[in-house]
Length: 74
Image 1: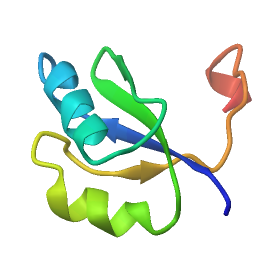
Image 2: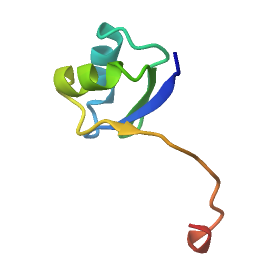
Image 3: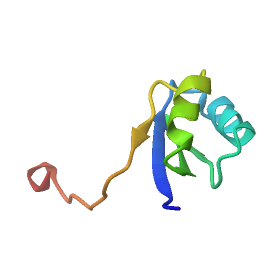
Image 4: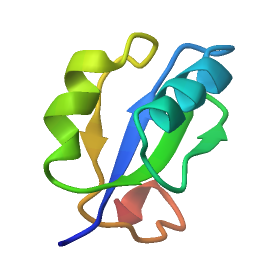
């Protein structure tokens, strides 16, 4: 099954609680950062996370990343 990367923005100070909730839901590679939490998930985990996560603002799916040296590169 394909593994996806999820990004969950949180209010500052709630990153640890959100990461704990994701670990309790059984998601692998949960990493708390300032203002957000990243984790790996399967496609069938996304609805479960949306329904059971209390401290995250929304669940975002990372579709790509690249380095932007300045605002014009965006």
